[in-house]
Every structure is written in structure tokens, then in C-alpha cells.
Length: 468
Image 1 (tube, one colour):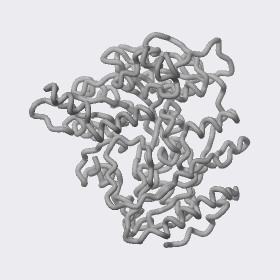
Image 2 (cartoon, helix red, strand yellow):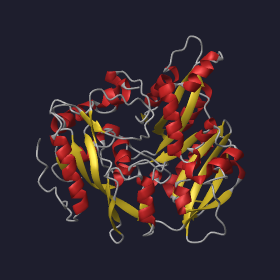
Image 3 (cartoon, one colour):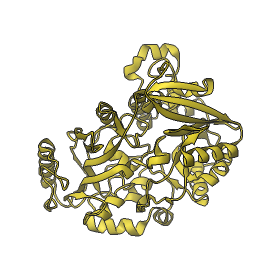
Image 4 (cartoon, one colour):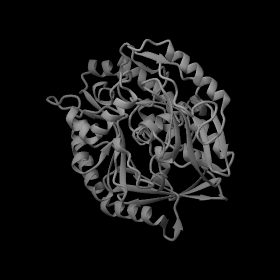
């Protein structure tokens, strides 16, 4: 087992000491030492927010369940030191006590910080702050080689720092991260602005993102919802110190339905950040959870995305409903669960294609632009371009001659043609050459050679395409 890089220990290159974290690292090192060098390794995780296969052939599971602490918050410097398995729910709870929040908070409470950095993330502050990895100042990583390294934008491991996002644990695992925070006010005022034409919709979205204002008022958050052709909404959020009222969508109320019914609204900042989680955007409807008697019975504690995910994972493994549908003679369906980005000037074209060929609704809309000109090679975007993320999570009926994957492949081809990118958290259908062309195979191979030369961790293509 290689030793940890010099500089690791109770502290870090920036000098903040974390003795309890250091003890957990040493226990993890002992686990690693007990694993034969010819055995592949993985994380022993009980939960996941991935929507693709997780085959684990002959891999030794490393127990990182203890890496769940918010280690330190510096209110003056606006930074936080956080362990890799900390959920955003726990992190946000800690930062809001200081009037701060992470620059980008992904939509679901149980997404972990380490997971969002290695697997990407997005939310309504992304038009200004990009993705979660762009707010990282320092990474402590357990590599596939078994080293524990500290990577920063300007040290000897800067290639790992910039190559870690979109590597999905195939180069190593984040044990500790230092991230930037931003001030936030107690409330968020929402404005839901309806459009009936997709081209004017995306034109206004771009204008708001470029200027940071809407009708003379500042805008801190931008996202949108498309309910169907001719019904698109921009939702613009502005932080505020006061609110005449606050709405509650954590139990009986359903947030996404309010978008069509209200022109304006107020939420606490905490409820705003988790506005989608209660109903997993709108996907709880497929589980019958949007019915009032069911919501009354379940209560707030069970109305959570992680609860729904367990139900879906059970169905994926046992296919109870699929067998019932087959027995009833219902047509086969292809799961279409994806997040993609295309340049804003091609967004209307993508939406036209999607409504014509796929037909899923609603669709989530989220603008994103890089914070600076850093090159993130495994998920490279043009830093001068505003992109639009489309999120869609449902299924499509297959025709008699259509095989599973038909619609996902069509989406992938269209996104590539429009100069976009697709997140890899769900099923992918690229062939090997196309995949490595899109996700910089040359850089990935060099990172793999340096940080996982014995290939104890899975290959990115194998993990994201072959395991489905």
C-alpha cells in the first residue's frame, strides 16, 4: 500500500486540523491494507441517487459510513470543511445557522457532497455559480492506487482536481472537501412567469441570466418548468429579509402544482432549497403519493425523495409492476430518466424535438454557465456559453418493433448534434468510441494511469454504459 502524500494528516495544506477526521482516515487506511492488491475496491454504500445498474463483481466494499461530518465552517472566510459522505440536507442545516449556503445545492436532500462533485449536480443558482465542483477549493481523495492525496487547483495534483468531476468514483473517492459558501437571506420571493412560445421563453431566460435582473429587480435563482407545448414557466427567485407570508409544500401542498396556480409566492430559504424533494419533483405521482389521503397518512417524515427511491429500487430489482403490466397485456415501456444540457440558442430546437418524439411532461428547465474559465476535461462546457439543462424522468411506450434503448439513443444523438452534454447518472447507450470522444478519453486514460495504475476501480465507460 502506498503511503499518503506528504501534507496529509490531522491537518491540510491550509492548516486547519481535524483530529476526528484523521482518525477515520487511519481506520480506512487499515481497511485498505487488509485488501489484497489484486482485488478491486468500491464504496460499501447502502443508498444511491443513481438511476443505472450498480453491478459489483468481486469488489471489496470499503466502509466509509463514518465520513458524514461537517468539520468546520468559517463564517468570515465563507468556507466549509466537509467530509465526502455528508448529505446536502445536513450541510445546509449547518451553513444556514451562519446565514450561508453552498453556492449550488442539488435538488434532493440525500445527495452527498462527494457524490455531487464526482458525479455533477445542478440547481437554480447554476446560471451564476455553475456546478458544485466549481465551488471546491480543496479535495482530499483516496485514489485507486490507495494513496490519500490533497488536490488543489494549483498543487502537484491539480490534474486530479480538475479531472475528478464526472469521474464517478473511478479515479478515487472524496474523503474531505473545502468549499466556498455564499450569504443568503431568510426568505425567497418567487415569480412564476408564463410563456406560450418556446423561442421567446428561452430568449427571456437568457436575458434574465445575463443581466441578473427581471423588470428591474435582482434575481438570485432561475429555473423553469414546461408542462407541455404552449405552457412554459420561468421561476425567478429573489432573496429577501421579509415575507408577508410563507407557503408550505412539505406535506399537503405540492410545489410543482403551485407554479401553474400562483404568479408569486414566498418560501423560507430552507423550504426553497428543498422545494422539489417532497415530491421528487413530480415523480411521487407515479407512486400514488400525491393523493390527499395518502399524504395525510404518510406525514412529512416519509414524504421524501429517498423514501421514493427505495420503492423504485425495489421495483427495479423485483419488477413486480412490470410483471403485472405484462400479464395484463400492456405494452412494454422504456425508462427515460435523463438530464442533458444544450446551448441556449439550441434550446427551443431541443424542446421541439422532445415534445414531438418523446412526449414526456413535465420537464424541468435549469440554466447553467461556468463560473470561470477552468477546464473540467471530463465534462467540458464552453465557459462563454449559457446552457439549458432539461431534466425528464418517466417512461415511453415502445412500439412492437422497437427495442429498449430506442428513445434514450435518440436523445443522446440529438444532444450531441446540438452541441450539448448528457449527465451519466442514468443509463447511457453510447458506443465506446463516441463515449470517449465526448468525455475526453485521452485525459481520462492519463489520470487512470497516474492514480489507478492497477485498475482497482472500475473504468468510467464500463461503469456508466456497460452497467445498466
